[in-house]
Length: 233
Ligand SMILES: O=C(O)CCC(=O)C(=O)O
Ligand SMILES: [Fe+2]
Image (cartoon, rainbow, N blue to C red; front, side, top):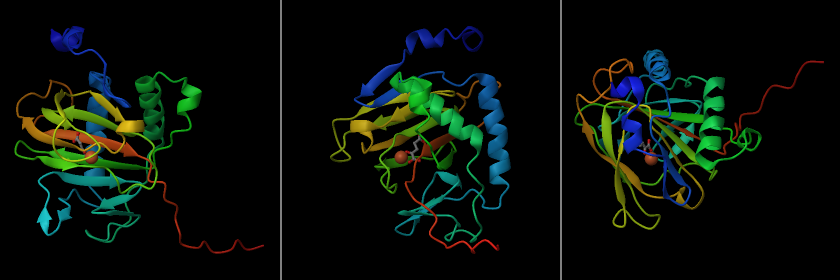
């Protein structure tokens, strides 16, 4: 019943968690979630596979595949130089549109203003029941445009902290399948992490039976530096 009539959303209103950080529960419909989960299977088929990035020699428990630009600690490149050297898949147009809508709705902006938000990379994370992500800042981007985060599958405990350090003050909130979380402005460099995934909580029909997909859309602020061949006259 909950999934059908959205009763759970009555207990989970949209909320500004901190200045510039907005949680919109149940933002994606179950059909949109299932459609994105299908795309996830295509992205993981290559050219670059899902992999745990290595941080100071330790492989992350969260597995990631990127679109547009490939992220590795602590840089973005077009080719996955720490995986197989292949260029990552392009950033899809529908994700640019989704990013516009997300920013417009989170900040109550007219759609025309949100059009200026042009994400060019997505980090697509997969969490199994044991995966966690330690407290960190998203700071490998040159741009300080907002980060748009979408969740599909199992629920998790998301810790959203302050911009100074990994410790308190922070708030623990639950991110569930279909939720949108946008953090920008004064919260853009807030520390955040995933402390737990709750197995068996993915709603029927979301396209993920076990585990959690998280997609963060970002603006790298980078430009390709390789010189193009001059056009022949
Ligand atoms: O899984 C999440 O909700 C957060 C992911 C994240 O913080 C990141 O990819 O940098
Ligand atoms: Fe992050």
